[in-house]
Each structure stands twice: as C-alpha cells, then as structure tokens.
Amino acid sequence: MDVLLDTERLTLRRFTEDDVDLLVELDSDPEVMRFLTGEPTPRSEIEGEVLPRILRDYERGPAGRWAAIERASGRFVGWFALQPPEDGGIAEVELGYRLEASVWGRGYATEGARALLRTAFTELGVERVWAQTMAVNSASRRVLEQVGLRYLRTFHLHFEDPLPGTEHGEVEYELTRTDWTTLPANRMRDHQRSLR
Picture 1: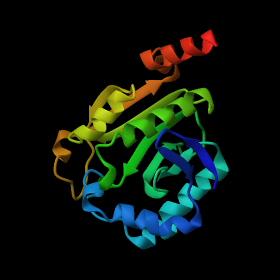
Picture 2: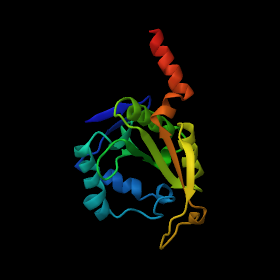
Picture 3: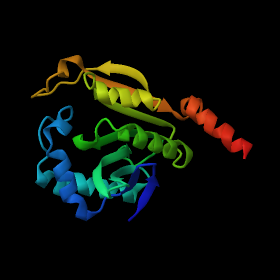
C-alpha cells in the first residue's frame, strides 16, 4: 500500500486498478453527487476515464488523488486530492474531497484537507491551493474556511442541465503558501518545533 500520509483517523493511500468498485459505490450515492453532477457516475466512465486519469497523475508528479481509509475500521470512506493542472505542474493545485455520506459530520473532511495542505506547502513545493464548489454547498464552504482558504470570487457557468442552486453560481477559494505560514495553527506548530 503506497501511503501518502496518516492523520489521527485516516490513511491516505494511492488508488490502484483494484479500486474501481470503491469509486463506483461512492459515486452512486445521490447525496454524495448532489452538488457535483446530480447523478451517479457510470461504471464505464470510472473504468475508462476517471481511474486511468488518477493513475496517470501519479506518473506525472507528486500531486494527485488519494483513497481515504478509516484507520479504525480499514474501510474506504472516500478520497482527497491535490489535483494538478493538465501539465502536471504543482505550483497551483486544486484541493478536492469526496466522502461517503455515512461519515459526514465527523470532521474527516477538515482533518484530511488540513493534512493535505500541510503536505502541499511543506513537502511538495506548492505555491497556491484553490478550490471550487457551488455557492449553495454550505457544508463544503465551511470546510474550506475552517482549513484556512479564503473566499476569492463568485462566478457563473452555463450548464445545459443545471442542478438546483446553480443560479447562485460557483465560488472559488484559495490559500497561498505565504498565507498558510501565517495561520495561527501553523505559527503555533512552528513555535513548538523551535522549542524542542
């Protein structure tokens, strides 16, 4: 198992070709897909596009998407990502996460996102992390704010078959390396290290 990192309750590991069923099950929950596509991702798309893209990203560099495993149970509970742009660069990456509805409200999204931000800025050389979600996705927006990303803008995209709430737009958040180093939790951690 190729592990990126462990948090208190999660292990983030690389996906493998054997993980198709896990991704299909995750994307088949209407609640999980509510603010994404509003419908399940077809198995053929996961097998032919989604998983191959995830595996290709590992070959291009250190950023990508990782399976989230609950440490206490060993169960797959979703994924977290520092998604690189098409060129595979890591100066700017997109923070993303998708978790099973059964673990919502436990703080896993915040825990995993914080750990990825720390990895991005201290190990991978990332300069800017950004994230987008629907403006009406208040739960996801709360997570982004809790981990230190700041609201940047609201914008509107055209969709042939828009989801409910689309009329309120999409929002973008960001966190730069400079801003990350000034977050209170990170200043305290650096201070504690200097005392050792």
